[in-house]
Image (cartoon, rainbow over all chains, first blue to last red; front, side, top):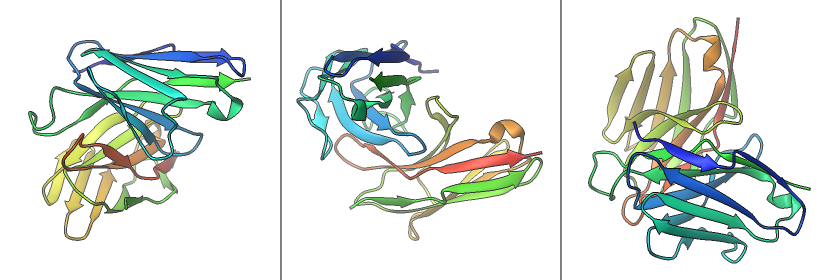
Length: 120
Length: 111
């Protein structure tokens, strides 16, 4: 099956520092990747849609200057949390969609294992 | 706007059957997914419905009624390992075909 990895799995940082999270599709090419944030006991909230070679599309209320997304290749997207603060502490999950929209019967997203960010 | 509702929590007994409902009101529709998520882990795919009716897959079944904006996930022969959160997600049509997630249902299976 389609495998998505994330690195790091856990990160603890001081307030004011920046943290980069990598999302990789290991055995398939992903034109589109998605970044989600999940607070404890809540559901996944989409932050942004990342397309290879173009600027990310951010959801309403998500600061694009704070959450920098780069999708430089068909297998790698990165999320950088800049000047992190304690309220940014959360579980960040990426997903990747197989191929191009419309090419497959279902536009299933494959999820990475998530990154637990704790900002002190 | 997008609105997807699920019960917050449910409890059931090992060996029993449980039905988790999901109602949705979305601006577009290109299928409905059910995911299972254990605490601290990523969601894993359970089922996909795009046409009305029942899809069966082992102990898990999912039903969709597009006219009613309604789906349910049916879990049979519950096992302790089924204790998890169950997420209903609607895929938008057009554009990036984003997934909009429901609030999630925490299921606790007791002996």
